[in-house]
Amino acid sequence: MDRPETPNQRRSLLMRETVSSADQNTVSSRSYRLQRFLRGLLLVVVLIVACQTTTTLHAQEKTGPERIVDVGVSLSPPFVMVDDGQYSGLAIELWEDIAKDLNLQSNYRSYQTFRELVDATAASDIDIAVTNLTITKAREERIDFTQPWFDAGLRIMVRADQGVDIRAVIAGLMDSGHFGAYAWLAIIILGATLAVTLFDRRFDPDFPKRWRDGIAESFYTVMSVATSGKPARRKSLTGWLGRIWAAAWLMCGVAVLSYITASVTSVMTMLSLNNQISNLSDLPGKTIGVFSGSTAEDYVREVGMMFQAFPSIESAVASLRKKDVAAIVADAPVLEYYQHNNPNSAVEVVGPIFEPDKYGFALNPGNPLTEAVTLELLEGKENDLIEKLRADYFGR
Image (cartoon, rainbow, N blue to C red; front, side, top):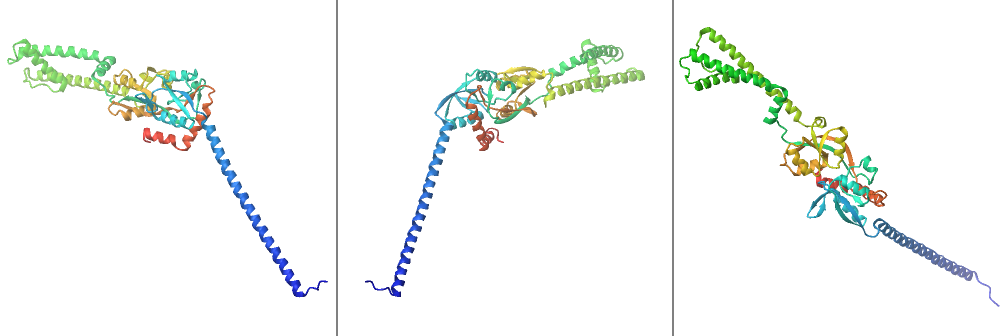
């Protein structure tokens, strides 16, 4: 038979039960925190793996397997240049960066003119056209363009020395009818020379007796009056009547001198104004040089200007310097780059930009690369790649 518990025993038993319950709660709390930590750690690991997987998939989707693409180019410094078979330039550097991101290998094909390049793109002979190709409605109807990546427009290149030469002055005098008046003046001068010779032979005992010497002396006297307005030193041979005659002849000489000076000056001024080209309004009536298949050729044809097409800027400048054409109309960046890199070429770019336009890469219709290249161009604008390339080639 058990003995009844004393109060002290009951208190001791109660304390042991309380301690045991507290220990159990502590163990449960630690286990719960450990479980939460492990779950959080697992979640972090899952997120890291997911991010890496997404990045890898995105890279694979962006680049895909390596692919060879046919790239058409047309030489147009500073956008497309070639040296020992290696292509370079602003457009080439931009395309090479895009091709690297898209895991593309370029097989370059060169075309002499933009027209040939556009035709090859439209016929799917090449995958993409890389140069400073202007986006136009007519081209857009045949080929696909990417996002524009360069703002440009047309400007004018002229000879640095737009002065007037003697041949132009003579031609201007003939066209204006002054040569007819000069012919009459020459006849008058010859008549006056003969009259002075006869007069002096009769009244001046010191006048040369030989006709050759006498005519030379009289011609000198007449031309002194005609060209300088001042008579040669002569003694009075017939008194006051001779002086009046000399004064009248002096007035005629001054008038002749004034007429010749005014006519030549007016012709030179007219030629200078007509030959001086500083903006678009000075072009009508002149033969303009353009590049074959360019938007400049389309523009001058549309406005009805006379033009001559050239395959390259070098051939166009050579014709300009020989005065076969009065000016060159072409893309402003191309003309500015040529002038900057050829300071001794005796040409200069004048006037503001007109007919502003934009450059883009061109692809054959329906090419799936169009969207991918456009996205790369947008990325190139966002990370200032295009602006850095512009600064490298144009310094601004």
